[in-house]
Image (cartoon, rainbow, N blue to C red):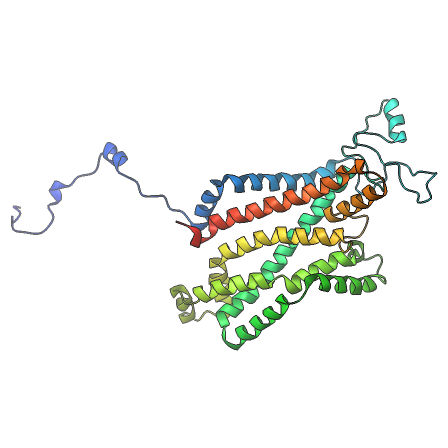
Length: 355
């Protein structure tokens, strides 16, 4: 049938299937991606953040896996006591040295694993105590970040979404908490919990020590306020979005809107804040243990190891300076790498920093 030349309809005879070469020459659109995948790609391109991430992974492997296979325990006494000293101190071994009993075993043909860092003033293998001390500090940091994330995220979301008098009252409580001296609260809690634990010597909490438990209590009571403020500010912006209005129109409750819409869309702020909270918690635990308010002996911590080494240097000789430098350098490297990792996460996942 002959087509009318004045018709505006498309002539299908002029169109045909594209050849394979034409299909390959066509510019493809950018493949589908998500906000998380885009953030991961930006994070991988950051060399400083990647070096910090690799260091943290290696550190986690060493402190959690190496102690399982290491032949010495952190509370095992290796060397012997001095018999001519009134304080009954131990004959500290130098790095790669062996105790008399170990030397006898070596002479009989038995393999004895060397003490890489020697022993401390209490006769314990120092290398395993450094690993277990770093593990203690990292556990405190990660659990403190989880506590802050849960409490601060929930309270901040409720304040930002509900608003009104509830937000006003909670924010005034936050201002009061900001004015409290956390060190004083930890000292008071440590003294109070020590009296409670005296009657429960065999309990798990008593083994950790009152100062160690006091640190977690203070994190739960005081350190969530920064996270709450960040999440509140994010929720105040998100609660006016169309998808929140649509959820309200469909009859969704407050809890569903917060946990299904607001918190997932605030994850960039939450992840960044939690990542930066970990080094802060580790540093807090380290200097509290250095002051004697942290973990209970014989459980080691990097701060307590540095404190013990300092007292040993003062009473003996500066030749043992490496006993102090090893835990001090470990604290610096762990805190620095976690801070750089947090900065890398912020650069990768914060939408306000994207070009």
